[in-house]
Image: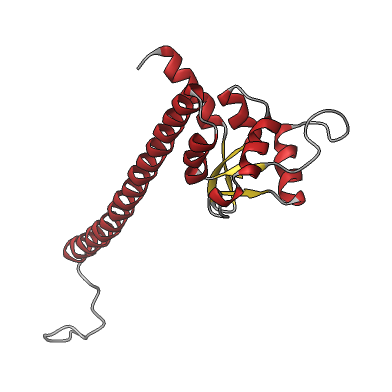
Length: 173
């Protein structure tokens, strides 16, 4: 992979957020990647709104937008956007390539789709790793119980139990 592709993938990865339990990208980040103004992207989406159902794209609530902005550390008074942004799921990003029909949009969308696929693969590997760790912990617990039983048996063999019974034989007075 070329250095330029790695840089683009890194930018894309940093622009993916988890909102409403979905991986999404902000309209401003996508516009930046596509090399268009955010208002141009939003205008194109509004003209083709029937292509963007709720599971493809949604507008953040004011609370979600404030929470996200607090992570950026941006000022709320001057500059920036006045309205909560549109956020696009993976399917919404794929649909954008049909709305923004430029060579740049096509290439950027290919890169974005590759990043989403890598993230899914990573998540699958992560789940598999967690499962293996859980299995090891269960096995370790089982081994610890066996070892404790072995120690208990060895201890009984080494230290004979003190009997509370009377000894057998004659008693000397």
